[in-house]
Image (cartoon, rainbow, N blue to C red):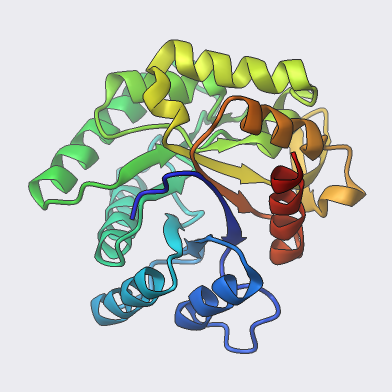
Amino acid sequence: MKPTALLFGTAGTPIMSKDRGSLAGVETVRKLGLDCMELEFVRGVRMSKELAKQVGEAAEKNKVVLTAHGPYYINLNSLEKSKVQDSIKRIMDTARVANTAGAYSITFHAAYFMGQDPAKVYGRVRDEMRQIVRKLQDEGVKLWVRPETTGKATQLGSLKETIKLSQDVEQVLPCVDFAHLHARTGKINTYDEFRGVLTELEKGLGRKALDNMHIHVSGIEYGPKGERNHLMLKESDFNYKKLIKVLKDYKIKGVVISESPNIEEDALLMKKAYEAL
């Protein structure tokens, strides 16, 4: 199910749900008045095909758009070939299960630089991504495959790198984590800076990118080396109100996933701020 407006939701089953399963999560998201949910496969892809179908049916019934986050244990630039193969499998498994559930998009952290030349690392990741997308296409998996903008300079995932991957590999668009961009740069926290991100996306990828956004937002604690941990929006310096204003002004379509410690509280905070404009 593709979003036709800007939707707000949670990274996983809302905290208030006593049942921690994804089926209950979809229903709770709808009860809260939210519109999307990210399936969190960060510890591994452990959802059966049958359950994925049930989650997809529940999402369709409740008009909830699904996305998915792949495992944290992904590094397409690992020095060990077996770990690269394991990373490819984790991305593929995430895409397959998400596709069965009717999800719109998947995201993951693509690679670490491991002290190597960033240009060479980029080339390696690009080549692996081309193979992954080709295999998914052969299987009829058509959702968006998205490398995420990352919170540390030791990881591949600057805005420029994710845009270039999207230019070089079909069926790929960035997942823009604005908190990560803020932590990574120490900047990107004003209206003009947020606008600059969207302008760069449109310049590199066309209006298509702005009509098909997959966004992560949270408060964030960071230092000279980037991201430390996520915070509630009101407990951080992240200027979410200006971000919401830019998203409204640019008529962005897609999903905004809250990754704050209380996922539904900040998702509702952002949705209300958006609707008040």
